[in-house]
Length: 220
Image 1 (cartoon, helix red, strand yellow):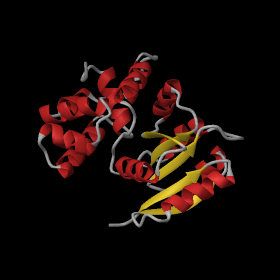
Image 2 (cartoon, helix red, strand yellow; image 1 turned 135 degrees about the vertical axis):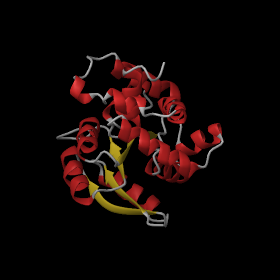
Image 3 (cartoon, helix red, strand yellow; image 1 turned 60 degrees about the vertical axis):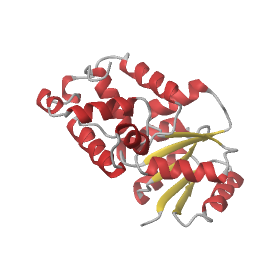
């Protein structure tokens, strides 16, 4: 199995070096670059196409939230983990709305960091379910998107009963493994269903798919 490529983004050199040192002991992870602010993060992410970005929140020139929005716009399959010193529910909601798939405090253990990287790289979302739901609900309460941004009715009707059940669990922040365990399916089967859901709903990622499902009434 190829290692998970990671881009580290933090304006403090010591923080970047610490994360690199932690990750270099993990043979399943490969650090491919470092950036000191949001603008450099976008440039390097576009160039290196990492599987995961570890993103600081507060940085000069461009903060982590804006950089995450732009990276997800350019590279929808790249997963972003927001890393911060602030345990703030409102910030978690903002991070999810920006497109982050995970949220960690900077004092997280090596094992938790490795677990989170592995989970988001395989399509999971590691955010408290209640906060994920709050973020999605907040987004759905915003102005309705243009009809061009929504999937065709035929595409929506193509969702199978199983896919609708999986979509509901996506909106609860479940990982592929958690969904597989809940529905007594193989994890690889769930992954294929998630890919199909994303394609049918014309979504950029699983969070976007959940938001679309809420907007068009597939999830109550």
